[in-house]
Length: 574
Image 1 (spheres, rainbow, N blue to C red):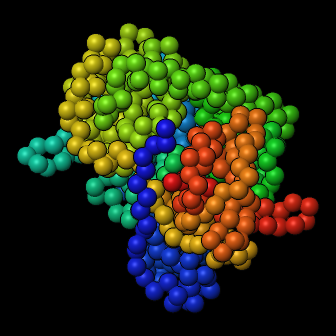
Image 2 (cartoon, rainbow, N blue to C red):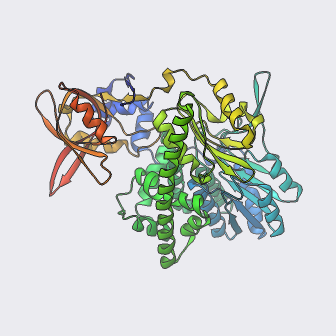
Image 3 (cartoon, helix red, strand yellow):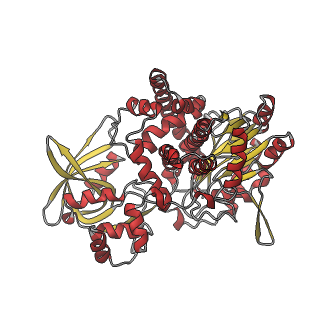
């Protein structure tokens, strides 16, 4: 049965013809840009042609000069710097930026990536003890640390210098309606989310924060700051891989990062690109999010993220090829495990009657904890509500959550903190540890606190422009490339048309989930069309309707045997 959807047209206003004339773009393109909350002429100019020089000054980040000064002294005195990262794309790339950057400055650095199962997320007591035992002088965190106050304070008590670089939400306590930040007592904290941080753009990933620190450190040590431009591709990769908003500064960074990634000189990254049969010059944000990035993530999920880090660090082409093949194989294994987990979670939700809950909490004891977040994301897509997937973890349980609009997971977890051993994250995603006996209470409390309305749980399909297919041209479709890179916050634009006839639909593809068709408009203009999804459900819908249908679509150009034609990708229908 087709899921209920609410289609809404984004009706943000502006003089689209004037914007189009000013920037040499079609008014439709101007309207899409306005729909991305790009309003002023200056913002439109940055959206279309922003450069790295347009980013805010790195020195505006609170404590960044202090952190750079400390690191410069440690490098000059040859003190051992222990970098502690994380096992996801952002943690791997930020670790690489700091490790490689410090080594190139002559520093003595080594990196530890926590084991997802043994250590859990971020810095912990074991890693601090290890740093002390192995003679480290300084702990430098990246993509973690802001929520580890007690552990990092112990590190300082043990005589270590501690610097945090992070981008996660700052833990807080609420008293008399006022929020008070809970900040670790360390030597320096570089995190744009701090209340008194002057950096204007807050939605940076951990690798971008690390890149800013390396820039300031190079400057402090008298090196050409342009040398750090090599790390832009890593910061951009992490921005896409960590699903950050591709707006304003992030958009500029990712555009430049993709240009650099498409001619990368990093031997490991070139090997991974070759292993995945991608072509230099044709890599887009999509390939980071769905082809290359998952291979880096898979190492941290099923093996050790250190392998992904070593792939980026290696100078040996043979070793790079071996590591790339290994990471690709791990990702294929991860895909199979994910399919199994999704099926188990759906069965659990349907069997228990939990699908009536507004917040879904499914406990899958046999699921590999490293893929809980991926499964949560798939279940969220199916039910359009916040989801937590919990798995066995020693004497307790661990879990990951994925959210929907209007529901901040991190803030809601703060309200349930008495039931949790540990938690952290963002509004849209979170992780936690919990005792098994508290799982039912956790589910109940989340749902009791939930203020989501039934309306919030209906999937919203936002249409950029209700545009007749007859308006399409090759020129307009090529202009859509000006809107890239696409991703969260800068989604691929979608259009809508009505009274469409579907002709000659047929299911194709190995998995029988693709429908090829002809699409005919009211004026009898015909286009090739394709639909990806529940193919049988789509054909049954067409069979039951004799009249025309409405579609939400995206147009693209398909070139075959030297001939270019317009193809319509059907995204939604009714």
